[in-house]
Length: 586
Ligand code: AMP
Image (cartoon, rainbow, N blue to C red; front, top):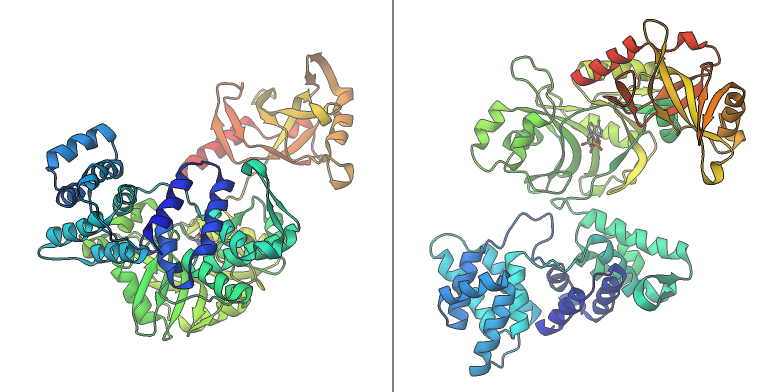
């Protein structure tokens, strides 16, 4: 493909900020790219020459670019620098200067996307003696054949400053529109503020297939190629490759054990939730090991210790495993919070000293691929069994995450205490028969960090609602007891109650309970005789000048009515203070 064609698309994309319009431009362009050009053109379109998980860099900074521009255009560096100060963007400078120069010597060779891509890749490979000269040469070679507007984008791509706003979502949708548009019955609405889709369900099927293919390959180039050449089937069978990271499965969050069981079912697996950082470890057929973070950064070099553990302690010729690396105190052996080891992730030098000073234990909790076979559609229980078979555990080096299969709340509570006492953040709940879903925050895996100590509080005030809640008292001022048995406000709670009576404790029922207890009304606010006591959950207790108690609940919500308790059995201020202090320690 001629480079000018791609540049034309860059220009169009730069002219709009509307996501749908951008998507449309990309979709139309994708249809034109031949299968052979697909991989490199899509990378260039994204403003890069390596996929996002690939740590290689072009390695050209502004100074080197100035030098190359000087050689290509044949003017002094100070002149270019002056122009740079004026324009603030080297891409624009290149465009302007090449324009002036081109009037004198018109070049006729046409640049292709392939040529640009190849030269840029070569830039990344050059090392050692004469690096600067050879890099300058390669850039200059491109710029001498480039039209002014082409030089602008060559310079921007090299410097990593494309910023044309082609995000992941736009790219995914563009692939769907381009290659499945006719199957979906898609219409572009005028003004590009909306698109019309005849059948959302069918649309979602294709969008999910594209997303899933991306989640295991992390390269839209591969996804688009599969979609264009072989359609849906190819997407569904695109398969992961050992050595190339896949998007990790993410966890949902719940606040209560009941909610967790509701989502993952009973019995469920519960595991320690380690406070470290995620490592996806790949071992290839040839024995090479690569480590990636949750954001797909390659951290193999930073963790030679982890590479070693995986090499020595995990059986199998090739695999991908999911784990959490946790720092621990060398003297006491206790787990340390994430901050203590976070510095290892970005570290480029003194690696051995770092691994000695800040050791980590690898806690393996899942397996994604084994001996060339994807494991993501296998049930959790089966994946876990395999893990237990292949990991030779050695504490303080590599172990399988601590697990229990439970159905009872009391067993969860016990395990939670054990987890927290050992320095962990809480627990993870896992559904026994679920697959591994890359890139998704689904209910197969749930985090449960705080065992909330709820409070029993008295309603001392309320407020009439608005809109459809106008007939209800829908926000309640709640109070605890001080040592003189007086009520002290600690917050206002308006969530947790149901809109419909049949769903549980409702606003309507609460209004019925509170109405006879109204002492006075002012505007929407009412004072209530302290009689009704409710159990209240929250995220956190904070200091507050607003309330008499000096404390306030963050994100409070009603859990239930304590019909079994009278107002003078409410939680005491002392107790709230204790919880506040406990929270600060953890
Ligand atoms: P969060 O970072 O709070 O969203 O919690 C999810 C993270 O917990 C995962 O991405 C993992 O890095 C980490 N984690 C710690 N222990 C486990 C475990 N046993 N199973 C799965 N994830 C875990």
